[in-house]
Length: 467
Ligand code: URP
Ligand code: ZN
Ligand code: ZN
Image: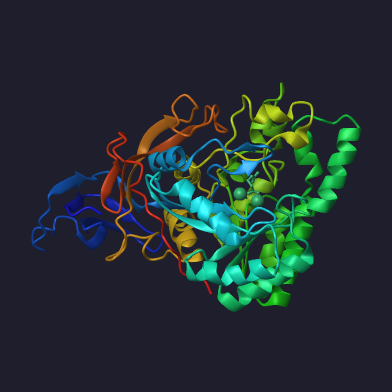
């Protein structure tokens, strides 16, 4: 924790609630006070360090509530470690990640959680928390869910997809949901009908349809919508809240909207890849489409309008990255000749804040909504608010100075993620992160990395603040 007093002077402070021309005083790693520009002398503020934010936005650090550092998948591991992935996150203005610890089948939740504590400990440049992937629902698992909630791991991801790996059947899902309704946990759902998808995969491969684009064709919109509907009904029966991850299809948004119109505690997240990329990318020739294989899959462009609308109407509350990078060379290539063997996942942790700022520039969302879906709502959803996700007295001084007029071009040549391609290669962005503080310490200082592995600490979370 920093013991210095830092004054951030002259910027436009943007939170989900308001935009204020204010100076921000940081003390001992926390926001101490805000005051109108120029009034800090009258307030008697002194500072060891002054940062000039003239012409910059002063934002709460981004909260990326969906990352997979070092995730084991398809016989390989996501290529970012906690060290490389959190450093890249910091470069992109994200100061907290919530990563997914994994329960492997036949093992306990606590063993999975311990393994993730060990992977992250001493490695992170920014603060981190964990969700738990539950892939073996049994009596012990259910009891352990209570212990995890007490330990600040208050959300559990279940999979209706990936039979034989992470998959849970409806009975297991219902049991886990019932447990969450008793202990305050939030159930996160990967909503795709995995059993039906596996039939379609087998049939496609038998027809010789092996290219990456077939990944998108077999993982049908209807099978995302059906699973979303089923997850909502199971959550209603159990009396628990539900958060559907990586929503990509218009029909799935419609299921969420219908549930929310009934006042049900149902929430949804989408990701930049579904807002900016499409099946056109999956169809790129020479196996290049493999770079875009993730699940739920990229959809035809027409779905993007529904996702943007859902973000504006609050039928979708959060944009996370689902950062799960695999190098094209040696990892994505495992699926040459069989799309079902391409490791699922895209890199993105570094570019979420920028891509969403581009959405502000393009008129999809307002500036405050940008901060809401990228910082405040994920913090509220996952029990981190107001420590994270806002700039207010008492909040952690996780602060981003953002230059809204800078121009940049995204490229694997210049990004900091440990992956050999960019899903957004060549995309022009207006706006760029300039300086980042994590609990008052400079981790990016005028486009220079000044952070360190081990600065980031584990943050135990309370339960969902939307309930
Ligand atoms: O393709 C994806 N999304 N990979 C990561 C695992 C998951 O389902 O979130
Ligand atoms: Zn998933
Ligand atoms: Zn994921």
